[in-house]
Length: 158
Image (cartoon, rainbow, N blue to C red):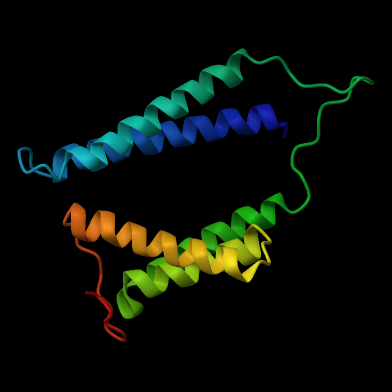
């Protein structure tokens, strides 16, 4: 499968996910509380970006090499990176309840940086993992008042 066809399929799937997301947000979160705007915004943003990607890939000519062969479908290791990312999201969902938001976010971001992005600088890994988890906690937990799981094993919230 060529990258162009793969991108078309991805755009169609993302557009379908966005439409389902918008519908679920619209029908499950009551209007007038302010909690509906944030997820609705991200659903609309995903729909717009998926539509733009789809239109670009439908208008793009097929990529061929000078000898007339179609470009390769995927780079080596690309499938492994995708599966590792999906697996880390599943593990993240399982860790949120027992560990809480901050420790599980630190662990998963560090694991993604090490195993998927192949970064080996300990300072960069620690800074990104801790900075992202604390930044998200401050923005979503404190500023926006969103519920973030405190954890049943470790409770470190301020």
